[in-house]
Length: 160
Image 1 (cartoon, rainbow, N blue to C red):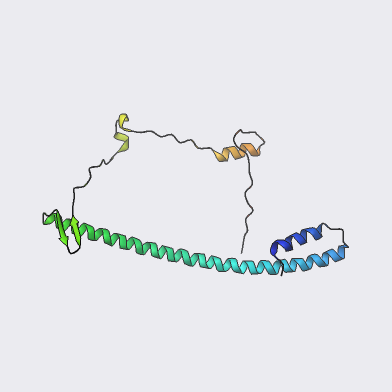
Image 2 (cartoon, one colour; image 1 turned 90 degrees about the vertical axis):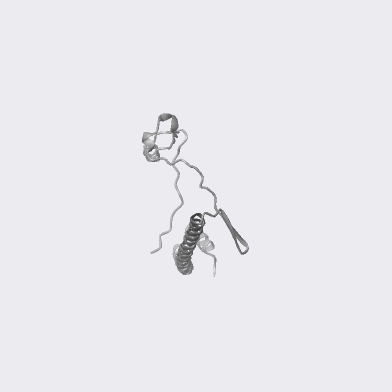
């Protein structure tokens, strides 16, 4: 069986050849049938890969949830140990091969209302962003805009 691109190229060559019209029609019909068979096989592969993709995403989601659950349990156990050490007014203990110790938390700033801060304590940031919709409209109307042009993206395949 021929490769898909070979079939497509052969089809294009025959359509532009100077052979007898009836002979071209028969040959093109055969090539089209071969193309459809090849496309059917490729679509079956695509469907299988889509099913695998969904299964892998579901498994990844499940593993991510399990990892998050494990992380949360670890954090709760650490908090429990730290709280117990503080309650007993201990800075550190040795438990088997492990050593536990606590330290004071780091001092940090919490902003309750950004709007109420004096201007000296605010950092302003400016973001420059192109208005692509307006640019597209103007370019379609034939206007020249330096630094922008219209490009056509790849064709997309719809499978139903």
